[in-house]
Image (cartoon, rainbow, N blue to C red; front, side):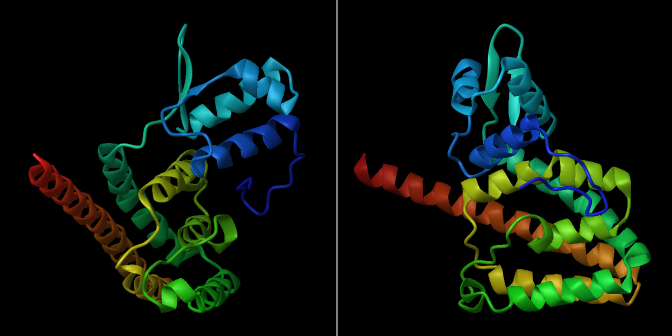
Length: 237
């Protein structure tokens, strides 16, 4: 899915379509993290020229989904714990800023649409069961909509353009299930209420706390898994 500012109207090129297909394959793990990218194979698979493929790969590099080195080629990024935590620190700062600006710049209609979206989210079975809070990308993603609502082109470019799919890749790779599912939804609800009240300071604080809590939850899950692995190792040695 190509994520664009809804006000933009652009023609979709072959490179756009290939970029989107490869992007989705990387995010969903169909093309494995850390795997080498074969340009001849991809060009043959999509029946496109190498120049068109390279245009798509250039865009994937800007989205931080692949890394390219001269005389070595392209690889899908590795999903590391350190990389994940660094991204969450960046998100905490920048999405907090976006939230403050959303409180200033969001229209009443945009706010109403977000409340409707959250009502739709609340009906999801996994959320009701408290096991997962999964959001489709783009217009059904709370964070994406808040960022767009900031109406700040630079924040939108960084968070929705450069980092958005990398964040979703990490979510897919590390799993969407979370004991914080219900709490995360409640935090979203409080954030949109702060935005609706035009309280930018509170909205920013709530968003920063929300992302920091998610990061802490991930750290706890990683620590628990490490302990379990160590216990298994000790039991078998």
